[in-house]
Length: 132
Image: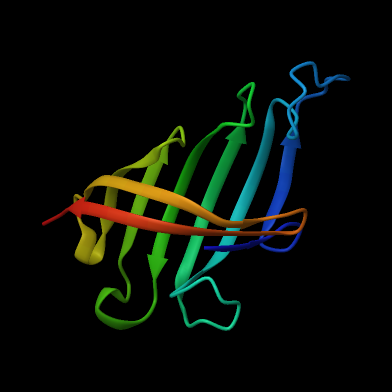
């Protein structure tokens, strides 16, 4: 997943508070929408195989988040299918469903941050699912 702050991920709401008492790098009660390219590798020129859409609510004292995201595939064997994740982040995300080839999926999406800086985030996901 390749994320570009302000381009593929945009803040849509933030609580009207004046301080960040928890000294986190991300303010409490921060809601973002995302529509990130899903690529075959961490390289910016790697093949796009779909996208990751959803929302993330950053509400933890250590910048943890609750996320609803959908991994949609638009090429190859899984074209038209998606995996739905709704979870609290670490150490992995719960796969709670899917569509197409991933109908009734359940499992876990473990993630490995490859790059995180002020404007870009690249995350590798290793997903294990049971589906029908």
